[in-house]
Image (cartoon, rainbow, N blue to C red):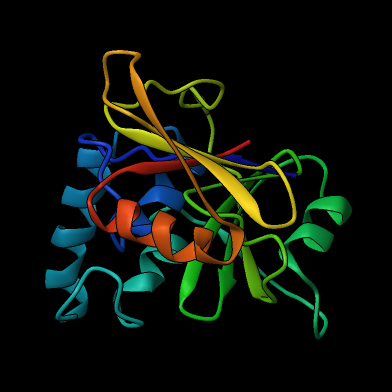
Length: 187
């Protein structure tokens, strides 16, 4: 199962999957995680917080246990096999969080192949609010026929503009909105 979750303090869609996954599985504040990763760069000599050199933070600081997996196990299959617990899933150029069999991320990566997982066992754990988020700006899409899709663009004041577009243009339309910092919510 997948649920949209973006802990970025400004609700931005950025390439911060490492920070997002750590926030979800540890319950720590986003800014605190960002600071810790940047401090850890000085220890590892890494140039960026999400470089391979710096990702050992999860094992060395969080004391996570690395779980090797069989070949071609998707994130969805991993979640079904691990219905309890907190995990960071390593996929091709992406990290995602799995908590109690559910993927929390800014996009549905459930069909992606998992290379390995980190099991997080640190206690105590205070889960971030994974239930509901209020978005300043967001958009939704709903396929109304094989050829038409309804797009709603919300302005943050519970008002929206609705557009009916050709279904084949939906992905590109949503990508443009995401690039403009709109959060996409799949209905």
